[in-house]
Length: 233
Image 1 (spheres, rainbow, N blue to C red):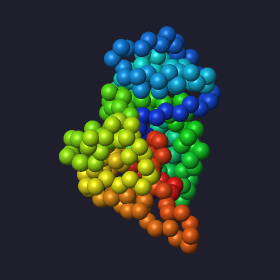
Image 2: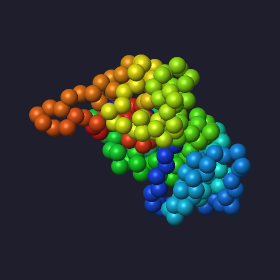
Image 3: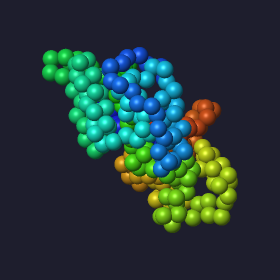
């Protein structure tokens, strides 16, 4: 049964072109002074997309995403997938996708179908909603990792400047010195539901020696990676 994890990323939102409209009225964007600069930048990027739907623009125009708006975006995604013959079940761990009765027997959901249904529903709204909820301060990834290290007594990077710490954790070969530190690197906010064992397994993959003269695998997750999504090493 194919599984699509929730797009719980690290606060990075890319811009794509997309068509469609819902006929809803659109509010003039208004930035709340309490919204961190990171999220203002990401929402500005979304609002600058000329293919943004009226629904998405209406949701993001106040630089906030309410629980009700997020639920509506999820409903639009589920409805779109149902129209394509796929049943989506939502849980705390993300989305489970299965073929609707009588359709797509023994098939894996095409990524193009998922991508198409994400556009206009969750593509922008979900990462912004989760980011505002889990990282309201708008911390960068290295800042998240450093805060996690400090909260869990991980000694790595103590005494380094911000720039030096950025360089430390940006090094593809860096592996934290404690098990909890390894989890901090892979899931600093705890929003992806990773375990220490999973973090250690991914670090072990990074440390794997080269085979047949080929470079060792670099299994650093890409921006926006979340638990349940494959990492192309």
